[in-house]
Amino acid sequence: MTEKLSSWHPQEMEIRGIPSPDIHNVYQKWGEGSLGHILTGNIMLAYDQLEAPGNLIIPTDAPFDGPRFDAFAKLATVAKAHGSLITGQVTHPGRQVDRRIQPQPLSASDVQLEGRVLGIEFAKPHPASQEELDEVIRSFTFAASYLHQAGFDGIELQGAHGYLLSQFLSRSTNLRTDDYGGSLRNRARLIMDIARSIRANTPTGFIMGIKINSVEFQSDGFTVDEARELCSMLEEATFDFVELSGGTYQSMAFKHERESTRKREAFFLDFADMIVPQLQKTKTYVTGGFKTLGGMLEALKTVDGVGVGRAVCQEFGLAKDMLSGSISAAVDQKVDRDDFALTNIIAGSQMRQVGKGKEPIDMSKEENVQAFLEAMHIWARRMEEDTQTMRLYGYVDLD
Image (cartoon, rainbow, N blue to C red):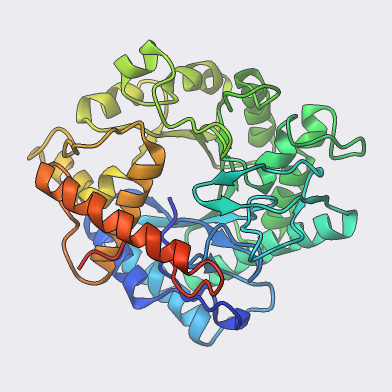
C-alpha cells in the first residue's frame, strides 16, 4: 500500500514527503477502526529515492523538531489514539524509482527493470558500492530512531515486491560476487547489517519487523525454500515479526496462482504453511486476499496475524465491525480482485477521499464502478499530459 498523500514539489526537494492533514485523517480513521497493528505505506529515505511522488520521507538530515517531525508525531498520535500499534514501513526503492526522479539509481547489480510498469519507466541501475551500502544502513537506522522519537511503536523493513532489499535477496537481480552476493546468507547480509544497527540504536521494546516475498513467481526469483531459510536467519537476528507477501513489479503475485489458494482465500497462505512451523519466537503475518472472517480465522491456524489493505480502504471500520459481530465479510466490490493495478488505484483513491473528509466510494455498486472508471481515464490522461512537469501526483481525485 502506498498513500501518495504527503507533500511533493518537482524542484524543491526539501519540502517533499511531509505528512499532510489528509494523511492524518486517513490514519485517524484507521485508528478508530480497531485495527490491532497499523503498518504505514512506504516511508522513503531520501528526497530522490522514491517509490512515487507523495511518499512519506525521512531524510537523514531531518531534525527531531520542526514541521516534518511534528507531522510524523501527529500521524503516530492519531493512529494510536484508540489503542492500535503503529509501525512505519521503511523502503529504499533501489532500481524501482521513476527515471525522472532518479536517473542514476542504485541496486544490487546493473539489472534494469525494462519497459513501463504501472505507467513508470526506470533507468538502468548501477551496483551499489560499499560506501553507498553503508549509507543505506545509516539511513534505515536513522529512520528507526526518528520513528521512535516521533512516537511510533516500530519499524518494518520493506524487503518484498522488488524494492532494494528484495533486489539483494533475489538471484534474478543480485549478480554480485562480493560479500553481498552468491549464497542466500550473503544476499541477506544487507538486511542483517541494517538489523544489527537498528537494534544498537533503538531501545528494547521497539518493534523491528520485515516484509518479505514468500515467492516471486519468476525464473531465478526468490523461492519458498529460500524464504524458509531466510526466516530462520531473521529469527536469529531478533526480528519481532515477518510479514509474508509475494511478487515483484515484473510478476504481480496478487492473484490466485493455484486453486488451493483460491479455496483458502489468502494469496500466500499455502507458502506460509511451508515457512512458519520452524519459527519459535518471531511472529508471522500473511497479507493479501482476505475478505471474510472465516478466511482470516482459518489463516490464524497457521500464522499469528493477518494483514488487510485494500479492504480497509473501502471499509475503514472493517475490523471493528467484524469484532463486534455485525459483519462477517468485506464488501464485495464489483471489480476483478485479481487486477492488482486497478484495485490498487481504487484503494488509493478511496484513501484520498477519506483524507478530504469524504466517505470512500462504494465499489459494490455497479454505477459507482462505471463512474470510477470514467474518472480514472480522465485522471490517467491528465497524468500523461503532465509527464514533463510532474506537478500532478497521487490517485484519482473523485469530486
